[in-house]
Amino acid sequence: MVFEDVPTGITEKVSTNRFHEATKRKLNAINDGNNIIFIPPEMDKPVTLALHRFKTYKTFGIHLKKLSLDLSNEVRLYAAELKGKYLFGKGKMSNYVSTMLTKAGIKDKRADPEYKAKVNVGSINVLRKSYISRALNDPSLSEFDREDLAFAMKHSPDTSPKYLREYGLNRAMEEKKRLENITYD
Image (cartoon, rainbow, N blue to C red; front, side):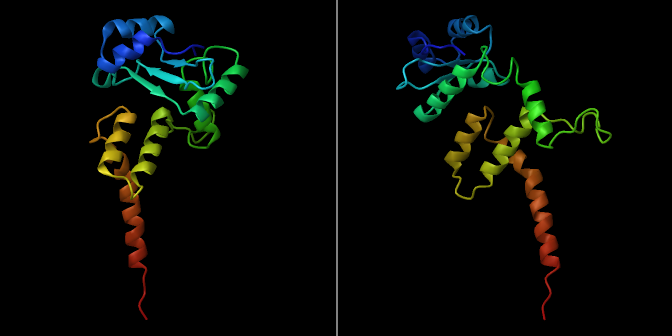
């Protein structure tokens, strides 16, 4: 977290070229190469996420995402209570997400007798895929919304249907069973 607004030069460069190498180097220097949460002290300015380190960076480039003022103020309050520079946890999200998924019952603990390596794997992808599956199941989702969702998740719009496949197959099997059990008097 950086308690200031996004430097103007960075905002201008990203708006014209998401792949500007000098801008990426500046962002890397600000937060040891990690993505950054810029939190301006003024309550009327939004918090901005500077995303420049992620798996598909070479495809999507640097992104600056402004939060709503309501959410920005919630982040300000939460950040004020923290001791450290990370919004969630003390570093990378792996342990935080793993613990959260274990507490939610989605992932088994290694000590559990039911634990199977590479089967009970839970990661940020579980959260992302479940969000995408839920969002894509919305019948009001237009093609434009679908594309926006794909870009927000930093992958191709063609990837999104893969997340629905398993859900769709399960749903189809349930519907088939329901129809097979209908009796006519």
